Length: 82
Image (tube, rainbow, N blue to C red; front, side, top):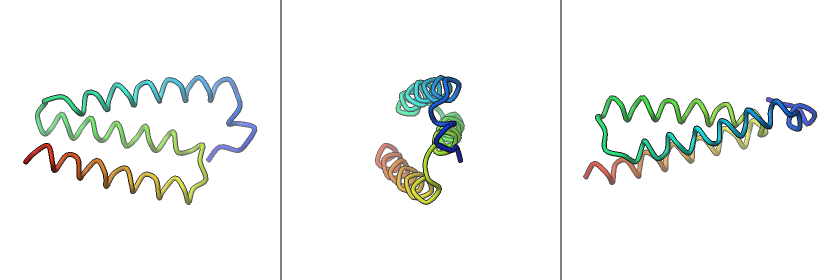
């Protein structure tokens, strides 16, 4: 978890901006038509980026938010496969 001073460093802000852009790219890729294997790989990358971005949040909120987002993604993917 990052402390207040670390959250405002130029390095973290640059890394955060890159991760957020990459997350957006991966979400678009996840919505495209691809094999189940490729979809699983993309979802894994999305989860890793969310975890990295979560280091800037309090642990309790981070875990809760990730669980909720993962649950939502599973529901959306179930609908797509029907």
